[in-house]
Amino acid sequence: MNAALRKALAAAQLTETDVAARLGVDPKTVRRWLSGQRPYPRHRWALADLLRSDEENLWPEQGQATEDSAPLSEHAHRVYAHRWQVPREVWYDLFGKAEQEIGILVYSGLFLADDPGILELLGARARGGVKTRILLGDPESQPVQQRGHDEQIGDTLSARASNALLLFRTLLDTDGIEIRTHSTVLYNSVYLTEKKLLVNQHIYGLPAAKSPVVEMDRVASPAMSSTYSQSFELTWKNARQVRK
Image 1 (cartoon, rainbow, N blue to C red):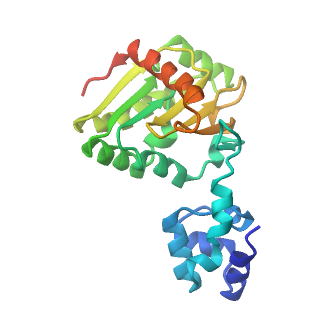
Image 2 (image 1 turned 45 degrees about the horizontal axis):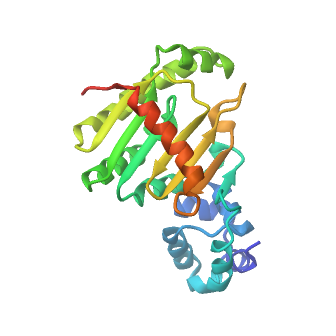
Image 3 (image 1 turned 60 degrees about the horizontal axis):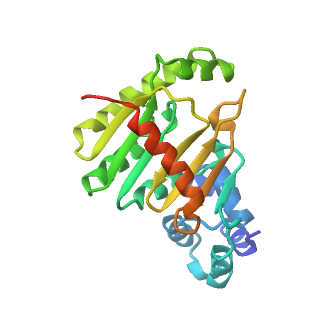
C-alpha cells in the first residue's frame, strides 16, 4: 500500500473518484496506485501537481528500484487476470515506445480500433519509421465464426472483426502500416514491439477480454518471446493483404 499517497489524498480532501476525474483515468486505476502500483511518469507528475507534493515524497526512488528489479518471474514481467484490467496507459506505453516494429495479431482487436488515441498513436509511430503490421481475423472465416460460438456470442465476433477492419483500415493512408486478414485458429492474441510483448490467452467459453494477459520483456526473456513472435510471423506469411 502507498501510505504516503493515501495520506496526501486525505490531506487534500480528495477521493479516488475526484482524482480519477481530474487525471482522466478510471477510479480502479487510482485504487491500484493506492495499493502500491507506481503510475506512469505523466500521471506521477500530474498527481504531484494536484496534491502539491514532491514526486519523491509520494514514490520514493529506493522502493521503486526494488520493484523494478523484481519482475514477476524470469519470463513474465507482469500478469493481468483479465484483459480489461490492463490499464489504458499500458497499451499507450507499449506502442508509444516502439522504435522498430509494432505487431498486432487478433481476431478483432476492436477495443484498440475503437480508441481514436490508439489509432493516432499507431499512425504517428509509423510516420516515425516504425514498421507496423496488423493481423485481423477474416470475418467470414470458419475459425472466427467458430470462436464466436465458443464464446457463446454467436455472430457477434464476426461483426466485431468487420467493424475493427473498417476502423483500422483508415490507417492504410499512412506509409509503413500494413494490414492483413487471417483465417488461423488463434490460441492467443499477440501485441508486440521489439521491446515487449503482451499475450492475451484464449480460453474456451470466455471472451478474450475476460482472459489473462502476460507481459514479457523481449530482452529479459528472448526464448519465450521468440515463441510468440514466430507464431506472429507464420500467421503473417499466410495472411491476405488488405488494400486501401
